[in-house]
Length: 72
Image 1 (cartoon, one colour):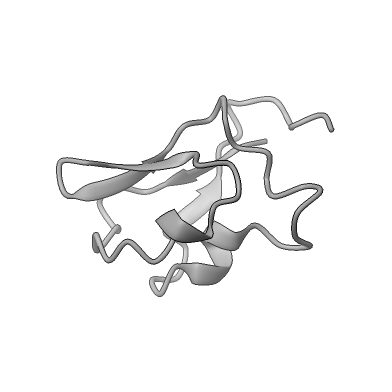
Image 2 (image 1 turned 120 degrees about the vertical axis):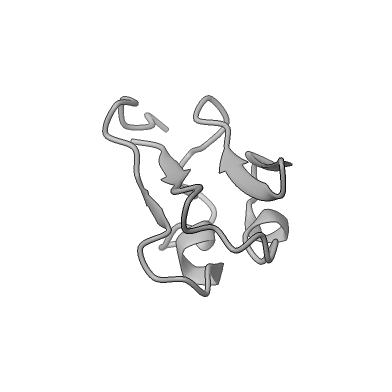
């Protein structure tokens, strides 16, 4: 499953954007979003999704259950 950013909780700090190894995170209207088609959950790069690790606001980056799990 890809991750998504809860826009109502995103502070727009941009901490997540440079951490994504797939350039899946982009800014839109002052908040950040994850392009599900580019999100690999950091599989093959890191043990933990870096957007989750980098985000200073708890439960802002969550699993998007509407997107199938990434297959490496």
